[in-house]
Image (cartoon, rainbow, N blue to C red):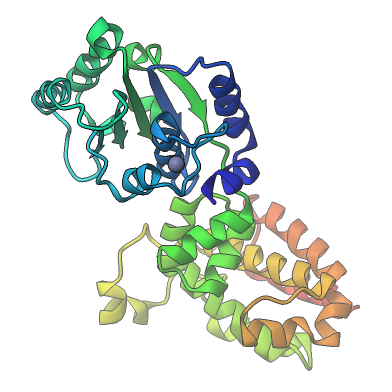
Length: 342
Ligand SMILES: [Zn+2]
């Protein structure tokens, strides 16, 4: 049940809400602040269920008819507004309040608003909502604002709400969220190891830089197994790591049609290559496999496992050097020579 995963994934939020429930000191207005994927909407639904569930013990039972209807969106006294694709205007809020006062069709007189992407509502809309909550007529009304960009909300709005900050995702959660958003499992896994932000993982894994860096890395790994210098020759021949973007890329329709990211910076590409390499060799050092045949095949190689500790160190040092004024081609040579000694 969701309350169990909330307890596990967002223990602080879980405990704060549970304490308020036990002492019957729930706020009239909450602001859930956190990153995409941190389960704020699900938590808002759970809180809404908890406000009206006849079987609640601490949190809602999540199983009864009332809980089910809240989740499905057919509970009349719950209104969910999503500012994702449009701006929520003051008139809309006033209209809803008018309807709300008149209805109250459900057994409990509790009424609940959930406003997703609240930062995209006009300040007037949010102010009129929160002002309403402070009036006696709003006594049995709870508002839950959800925002991934709390800095865009006016301080006057924030100060009227109890703010619950949701923790950033762990690599594991970031990975599953990226997969749920269509990223292939291997790339969701790799990128989540060095970036624990779903939005950035989504943008990065679709970027030309990442795809190029991964192609170079996989080519390198395929070539370098019998002999690291073969891998080096491969990278030198490709040239993309150490030079500016290849001219042939510019004419390719495939590249043109892709979402454009800023001009390929060789340092950026090199850095990404090393990020991927570090994930690979960390896994190799632990013999850790993931759900990808190609990756697992190379992770299991005795050759790569034996150089893994050195590779992690050499690549990490290399990453530090990239941003200093070094010759990338020379840096690449040095790293491989250092590794080949092992
Ligand atoms: Zn229930």
